[in-house]
Amino acid sequence: KAGVTQTPRYLIKTRGQQVTLSCSPISGHRSVSWYQQTPGQGLQFLFEYFSETQRNKGNFPGRFSGRQFSNSRSEMNVSTLELGDSALYLCASSLGGAGEKLFFGSGTQLSVL
Amino acid sequence: DQQVKQNSPSLSVQEGRISILNCDYTNSMFDYFLWYKKYPAEGPTFLISISSIKDKNEDGRFTVFLNKSAKHLSLHIVPSQPGDSAVYFCAASRGSTLGRLYFGRGTQLTVWP
Image (cartoon, rainbow over all chains, first blue to last red; front, side):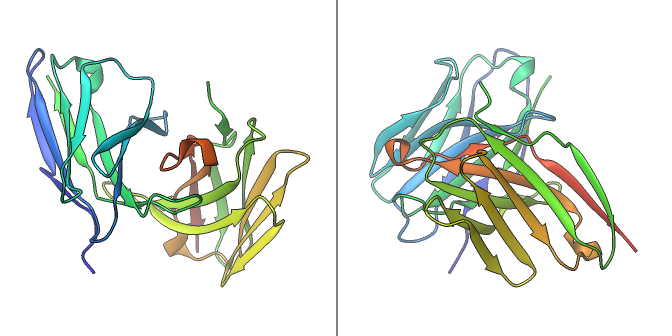
């Protein structure tokens, strides 16, 4: 079974630009969640989608948005990039039930210059 | 506010000895706890989990202990191997926010020969 696939692997943008990251979950998984990892901050939850509906949302500004398609693939968008948005963005998929473990992709390393 | 805390940013252990990684949490509504391992430039990989109705779960060299009254859990690795060197994240979930994990900031484990 193929794992979680994230594209692109690396991305360099400048302040003020916008960016779209893509995530393909494990086949059969209906939940996709996104996390931001910065040095020393652990994994900060962005949002989670289940069957095309946003089910949970973390404490990030409205510049961060996402969506999920009918095939469970998900995209995350960040508009008006700031230097502080430089981070590793991780996507994870799961069956979406209680206590279900998350399967993570390798992440997209975003650098904002 | 950090609901899952890993107070030791690093731990160094000799090969063959026991590694004990600790985690504390503040939210009594958490009902599942998980440990993830992460290598640089990769996504976290699931290691082991425990339900809040249990106090111990074992899988090979890995054992997780849960003390609900103290809101504390620990991961024991016996015996430790150099390949175990990675960042270990403690995570928790609760039924009201399905699909979301609350992560600690991680502990860097180094196992030396």
